[in-house]
Image (cartoon, rainbow, N blue to C red; front, side, top):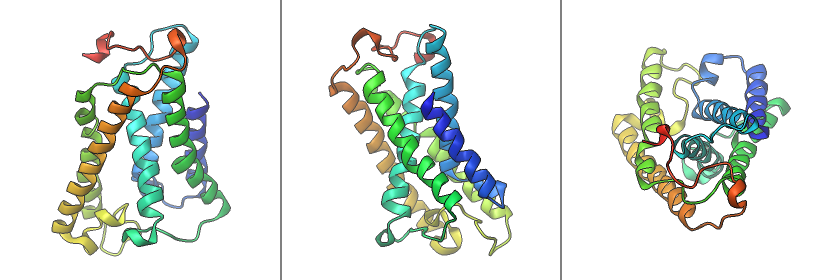
Length: 216
């Protein structure tokens, strides 16, 4: 519930600070935090009412996407040596929103996974299934940019998806590189889930095996 509230707070602050909501909600950051808030709020409600936990495939997807958000921001977009940095002056409100959405929610999701869920619930097939959304985000970003006039601020949400700078060949290369990195991250989450210790015993929120209809 606290993780969901953190995501919602960051989104609200970013919405207040933004002058272009269409551009704001085109960012993977916002979309992944919306997904995290929905999944974690749903999960908290089911726990509060004593209902079975959400399928690990769903909670694992939210975990992966928010981890992508945090890692890409800190190691790519905030790193001047990456070649894709998006460093600019931010107001205090924008800075607060950025820290909530790029740092606080990823850390909260990881802590939730490590402390409040049972290990061994994530499956290898989940890793490639989770990639559907990141790959669908690519045509969304490119089609949106194609409909905007050249030179429009924020025409493409991220430098590595900027057709004007990278060209379609460069975008294809970036897609392969980032796609492989995301798949490795997904596999790492699954493998770590297999070897991490059980911290909460039978009280853990996530079932240790795929037992519900949503797991098929």
